[in-house]
Length: 80
Image 1 (cartoon, rainbow, N blue to C red):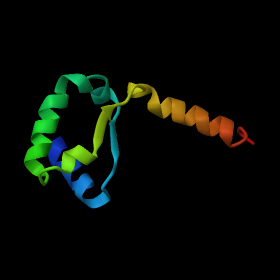
Image 2 (cartoon, helix red, strand yellow):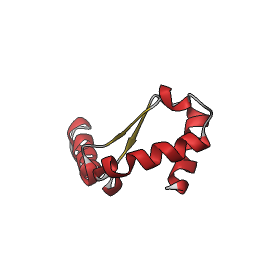
Image 3 (cartoon, rainbow, N blue to C red):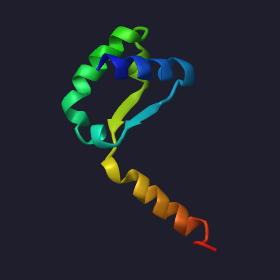
Image 4 (spheres, rainbow, N blue to C red):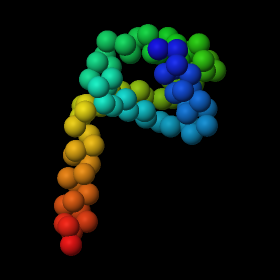
């Protein structure tokens, strides 16, 4: 958890995102480790930094790459 918190804290400090979406297999179980992640992030970031960021688990879980590919196929005009 500390490694994920460290990586996310670096992203937060550099990019200042309003929303972070955790996806893939870990996104499916996000509700289980969310309290631990937020606690670890609060140790890494300046006080009050987390109040400006929403961190959520993706509802697409591990289907996101497939759905993205299908979206590109239909919006780019197909194979031709």
